[in-house]
Image (tube, rainbow, N blue to C red; front, top):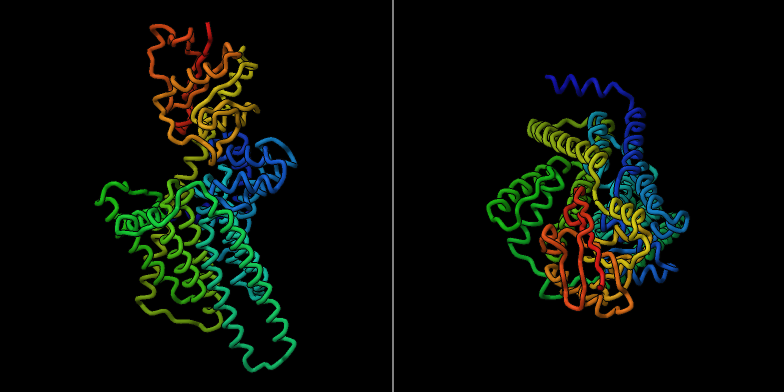
Length: 519
């Protein structure tokens, strides 16, 4: 009763007011957010690329298609500061929020809960990564395929962009391809009695152009993905019950933000059963809309297959794609069914009404969980930095070490420090100075516990350097009791503890600073 009273009260507030609140809170979040390694890695790759061809070559080993890196590259040309990428990300999130509030067929309460949910409010807004493009394109696709003015060319553009937004976008693109084919078949049936040569010629040209656009985009994306530094071959691509249960657990993660322990069969089994139940219930709920069911089934099967066969995903940003697929399917279903209800005065059976009621309650629970997690995560980011990298950079810049040679490991965890410092760091993984982590031509078997050895090797190879500052990430810190004195190495090398920076949400991006001198 109290919840319904609260829900009714917040529903009285205009959506424009909620959007203004969303934009205000998120732009403050952009200002407060500290970029972590994946965000800064993408920024540094774009910033240090001299042209688009170099951008392609540097980006390809990451396994990500070119669209988001290209947009980041353009933002770097406009303003060579990471905030330009963050504002670009915020703009995409803001447009997505506007489209959802303006065009989605959901009830007002559902729209408000979604707006401040974990993914649109935090993960796909304040964290500058590819996934906001997927969200935006799914919303655009849902608007298009439910519009009376459907355009196969516009749908093909959306599909082409999905192919090149992220490897996970392939599954969503497959879903929209099937929906497009279904709409085309419907159109053929409607025009079967029409023998207009003009219509046939125009339709043929549209189909041919759309086909060429989609195929070209898929080839472009695939040519980038296959250059990934990740080993993918017959031995790494396999499916079994364990990998399938892991993938189903990812679906649960996208729904209720609960990720089962992949090493425990009991956790995986329970999560798998719940996920199958949710999938079947969703399919039953949207089955009256062929377009929605096609999009949901094809996109879901494609993504589950990818997570089972190739890459299981390691973060909530990956699992959120399942939620975006669910949202897009419900959007299409509600838009189609509301139109059918008006035209046909459809009467639902008692079983259908029970499914509708039960699914509605579960979906509402999902949105409430997402909103609680989203609000918590954004306000936590206001007061507690996502990474200690910016604090380290400010310390170094304002200290006696500002012009000292810099040494750092691991490179993947030092990229954010390099980005905020605006200078390169010597990485033992690359055996040279650099800013971002390079996925090719690197030493990938360095052990974290051997940091002292890497410092010693650096000093031995660079006899002209008598002092340097070592910035070491949390998991590679030097194991020595500096309270009892400095660490003495052969050849008169002395290591003194300078400071540590542990105020970071991401544990790997907490840092230890050491002064290294040659006596």
